[in-house]
Length: 111
Image (cartoon, rainbow, N blue to C red):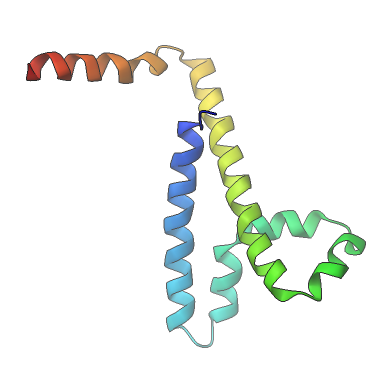
């Protein structure tokens, strides 16, 4: 299975964003909840759209909520990156071949 390059780039950016906000939450005592919520914002948006009946059994296990929100955040960010890559390549299909052309040119110059 080949992973989407756009999705992986977005996941990398989101990871840096989440780690930055988690570090900010560690150092900020009175704003800790805000930074923790913002660090997993895509996952909390998914959780907010779910009916209360689905979420209620999960609230009894806080570790499931904490890990699940971050995993769903990574899934949402990956899917957004995948869709963005598909849209960009649909608009400009020659961009898909630029990497191969550039790497071939660089390899020829180095020989």
